[in-house]
Image (tube, rainbow, N blue to C red; front, side):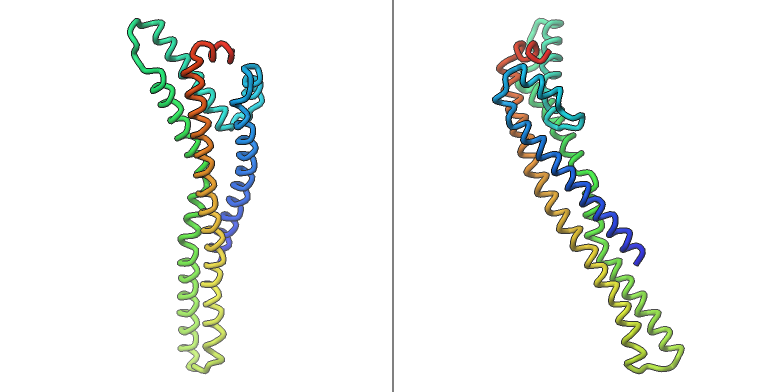
Length: 209
């Protein structure tokens, strides 16, 4: 029972934390959608106002850094070492992977609770029934009154396991789906950044400085 209580508290804490993160991510997404229509000064202001953990700002900085690094390499060497589009795309993909890993934090707790809580409850039921039958055997009385009470109490553990597991499973599935939608938003923004930096080139660097 104590283990199930601990698992329940952990799952609900993760649920609340992820809901707060989702609310913040929706606000960041709304700000990022307006990025395409912004002028260079507005984009610079957008970046300055972004929070440190804003994934859209992180992708923006990665794209800008990729352009700067590539131009620095071209000034040092005469031949075209890398295709600009491929280079920016690879750097943005690395940023997308990092953002995805951060978004998946704490979901392991929900998955573990949802998968193991029913078995923990079942184990409690088996353990309780075993001790109940052992006590009945020692007393030598096997009436329905003697059996029903202890066995009924033991079966409560199975119900508690399901009560703990079901919210965790539903929350996990909901967050996985939300993260897939969020990943689609990140990819769309990354494609816009890639096109912007490839087309603008040096102009994009100057406008961001």
